[in-house]
Every structure is written in C-alpha cells, then in structure tokens.
Image 1 (cartoon, rainbow, N blue to C red):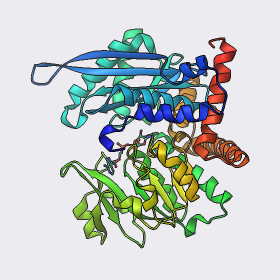
Image 2: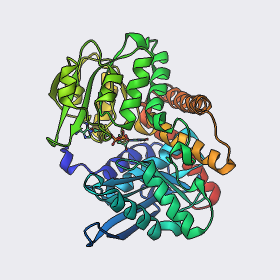
Image 3: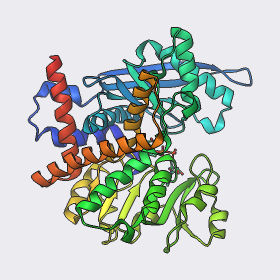
Length: 428
Ligand code: NAD
C-alpha cells in the first residue's frame, strides 16, 4: 500500500473488524462501533493579515461517548482529511478504554498550514473554531487537546474564546494548556515517557536489560524526543533518528553506532522536530536517507512520526535483531504487517496503548482543573507510570493467555469495555 493510497479510516476499521469477529458482537453493535457516532464539518472564515478573507475547513468527530465525554486532539495540517480525523477519533475511543479512563473518543482538525500563517491568523482560526463548535464542547461534553502542529498557545486562545462566549471559567474544557495557566506538570513529556514506561514493562517480561539494548526512532517531535530522552536516561542507546526537513521537503536519518547524544540533538532541532543536518554532521554523525531508520540492526524500533511506516513489504527487510516495536505514532503499522511481525516473533506494543500517556496526563489535567488543585511533577509521573503499566499488564496477560498479538489483546479489552458501556446505557 503506497502512502498516497493509505486511508487511516480503512486501517482503523480493518483492525476493528478483525477483532470484532472474535468477540461475537451482533451486527448492530458492530455498525455502531466501526464509525464515529457524530461528525461535525464546518467552515471558519478568517480575516487574513492582508485584509482578505480565507475560509478554512474544520472537523470534529466524536466516535463514541459511552464511557464519558469525547477526548482527543486537534490537528492543524494542510493535508488534513475527514477520514484521518474519523480514524483518529476511533483510536481515541480504544485508547481511553484500554487505559480505563472515563472518557470517550474524539478528534478534530483544521485544514491549514500553521508554518505559513502569522500568529494573529492562527489565533483567529482558533477563535473561529470555537465560535463554530462551542455548543458541542465543554468539560463534561467534549474536551480537545493539542496534536500535530497545535500547542498550548492554540489551546489557550480556544479556552479564552470559549470562556468569553459562556461567561465563566472552565479550565477542564481543553487540555494541553501551558503549566502557568491550568496545564499539568509532565504533560509535555507524558506521551514519550509513557512509550518508555510500557517498553520497560515489556523488557522485564522478556528479561532484557535496557542498558544492553539499542533503538532506532522515526521522528524527533514531542513524542520521539521525550521517548529518546527517558530511554537514554535509563541506559539504552539510540543509534538512529529520522526526521523531516522542511527546506528540502525530504526526510533524513541521523546515525551514530556509538549512540546519539539526545541532549545535543535537542539543542540543534527546531520547534517542528527537524534536526539541523550541518550541526549534526559537526557532531560527527552520519546522515543518510529517511527510510534507513527502519532497517537498522537494533533491538527496538520506535516509530514516532507517521502512520503506515511498517508495511507488509518492509517487515521481511527488518533486521533479525529487532525484537520489539513501540508504536509511539498513531497507526505506524499497516494492518497486513501485524501477522507478519507476530510470525517473526517481534512483539509490538500497539499505538493506542503505547502512546496513551498523553491522554492519561490530559485526564489528570482535567482532574486538577476541576478540583482547582495542582500536583507536583513527580506525582503526575508516578500516577502516569502506574496507569500505563497496569494497562500494559492486562493487555500482555491476555495476549499470552490467548496466544495473540498485543494489538488484538488491547482491542479485545477496549472493545469489550465500550460494548459493556453501550449495553448498560441501552443504546444497543
Ligand atoms: P510533532 O509534530 O511534534 O513531530 C513530528 C516529527 O515527525 C518531527 O520530528 C518530524 O520531523 C517527523 N517527521 C515528519 N515527517 C517525517 C518523515 N517523512 N520521516 C521522518 N520523520 C518525519 O508530532 P508528535 O506530537 O511527536 O506526534 C507524532 C505522532 O505521535 C503522531 O502520529 C501523533 O498523532 C502521535 N501522538 C502524539 C501524541 C502527543 O501527545 N504529542 C499523543 C499520542 C499520539
């Protein structure tokens, strides 16, 4: 499947159908759970700096709210599509359910390229988004968060517009806020650290010492950077990192068999997670093509950038050394690749478990906002570790018991929880 024809919604439905057939769901339940229950499409008119008006297309999809208010990020991306948002909202439902959060699944986006927009234009898009959506958002209704190319500043503009319209303070209506305005300590690190918390738990099962392992990572953005940071702090060695270069419109892999110095790379990356190649060369690192990260002789692969990177074509070419894949990104492994990885004896921690640290910390942010009492970073990370490891243990135990891969086990637990909530509510 080439990247151009890749459709994440079909991917999400294939994964769901694959597990649904083993759970003996009736047809009504299957129909309900394989698509978002609510889809909102709207236009955001924005006065641009040059005086013209441009209309941006926005979406918010709520896949399922049986377990609680919809929760999920907002992406600003020039190639955003309704099907991507549908898939991501569905994955959010399973992600919240597998960790045991009292939240449903949602996702949203605006088709725009923030890299070409002024801050003022971005602010007007954020405020316009809320003007279109405010009746369907709220701390007990639907709670957005940052995602690709959105950040805490975007969230605060949205919160401010929401509070201006509703006339109160509702810090729990949005998460990913800056720490000095209702954000949670540890949120920035939460997804990347969560990836490594689940990795540590898996290494313990496999009786592998993290200090004797090597890893290769795709991406150096929010997820990848903090995953790399904690993994190396714990003694692991990152030998390759791949990232995107805006200037060349191309991806590259930065290599160093002795192990990359993550702190040094953080100093030479921009806010979009692109590493300066000249400065990387000056550190003595080799630069090669963007796909090389996948074919390194390492114990662990951490795809933490894009969807559909590990495919039926690439699995046979992976190094025989690879034992573990931690899916930091959403949907990095094509559906057809799962069975091939399982046959090869490669254990993958599925995305909606592996990268659930972000939403778990967002849930903590909501609790802190709702109680108006804020926790220390250590407390946040300790609670995060506990929830991630507990979720991992349940999924791992089921995978072992049924001799299935961890994705099918995680889906089984998540679908079962959502199905029970739907039935208790009498929806189906
Ligand atoms: P980000 O925008 O901070 O970083 C993206 C990274 O991917 C950058 O380093 C960029 O250079 C790299 N990249 C882009 N195209 C590439 C290519 N062709 N080859 C190699 N590298 C490429 O994004 P992020 O927040 O780190 O999110 C990454 C993934 O993780 C996405 O799938 C996102 O949905 C998922 N995710 C993020 C969070 C979160 O809390 N940030 C939570 C759950 C899941």
